[in-house]
Length: 247
Image (cartoon, rainbow, N blue to C red; front, side):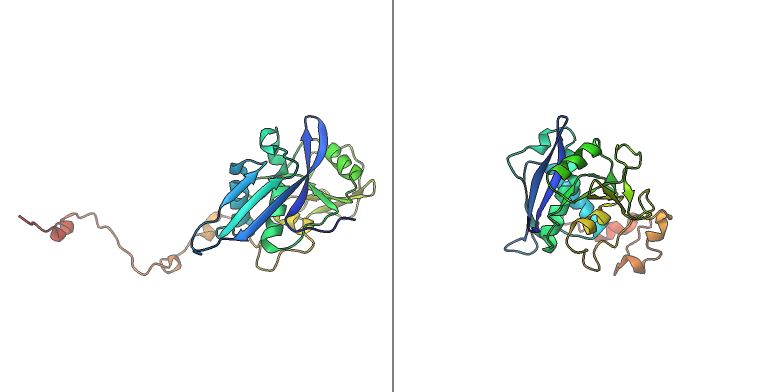
């Protein structure tokens, strides 16, 4: 048996048409020296721009902040996901390792992950889910966390474990060939299913709402927290009083 590990998660990827599992490691550590500096971002095996995007989504959608943290990402085995088609399909695995290291919460060792993350914090579908799940089972995993298969692209006949299999905002749990298949709509739900314990209270409270976004805007000047308000009346004559002629 493999122990649950902090900052380490397994991705289900495709190399051409062949599915395979790869290990992605993350190390998140506080910035040394001046606390006001921004942390470094170092990657090996994934695109730097993808890491920046994932950190932004985690901050905005899950309330997890990396500003004063150094972040290191490594794909084990010198595998270059940034050079493969569908490299974003390992987004969920990278995010899982990042959050695990940041919060010191291990990732479940019996679980493999796949899924692309959108800017709204949603999990986007990936191709060849059935082959990826079959590979996870072959490699000895008992759980797999994926985006929800809304289109029914997999060939598996699942035994439903709850009524959320077809999606109502909560993760769907199914049993296939002795393996638990957890289908999630959002990054936040996937994080709570992949870590050994749920995110601490106060984390991940943000969820996109379908209501009018104007309800989030400040309704008065006090809510803007401005001590002074300077209004331009469009008259430039007052500016001349501040000019000093030194001649």
